[in-house]
Image (cartoon, rainbow, N blue to C red):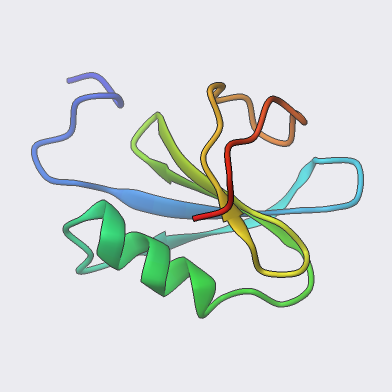
Length: 86
């Protein structure tokens, strides 16, 4: 089975440092939708940038100030084009 096609959604939040490198990650258990995962990720904001993924699919990035944005790329920590904050 591929990591990109799980039987059930598997959301994970990545905590990034100032250089965009992963410092730690956290699985979001019992989360079934993007909306619920975004809400759960917002509760984890601690002054670092966060990125939310479902399997290998990029969902959202959260800036240091807590704003969420959707991006066109799935590269962790890369400053790609950002849409309007959601």
